[in-house]
Image (cartoon, rainbow, N blue to C red; front, side, top):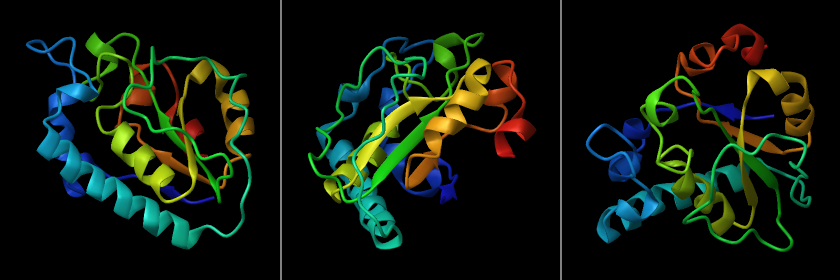
Amino acid sequence: WIVGEFNCSCVGISKCLAAYCKDDTPNAKYTDISAADAKEAQAYGDLMGVKALEILDRAQNPVDTSRLKKVATDNLGLCRQPLDPKYKCALAEIYVRSQPYGGSDKSSNGHRYDSIPFANGMIAAGMSCQLIHYTHEEHYRFFQVCKQFDAIIVRCNPGQIKADGGDQGKFDD
């Protein structure tokens, strides 16, 4: 497994900030990002995909995630998964049910506002990248499904697992 956590502003994906919900933009979505900003953000996502591809070393088909609760309402902006992916990746997110919009980093569909460029970068590099949400009620099932991936990109802001009623230590272990 390879696990990486980083903030959007650290890697230039802050170009996607137009897609996250806040009080004055409660219906923000991926298509609210300007074409120029989306192109620049996608360049970072593509670079991430290339680097991930260099790390992974065996090909498999996408994982069956149907046992996990579907949290997001859609995958707007996500590219089609490759028919024969070189590697299988997941991008793990969390939706804080007690917070407006599911947390300060969400688009109106329940995904992080920067998840689509990251996932599309993996896809552009020839890998599958499935968007999945962690819910503490499904902790064991979530990690059983995660074992089937070659790589997992964790995009859960610090404190969000606890804010949703989960245990960050349990998740980290």
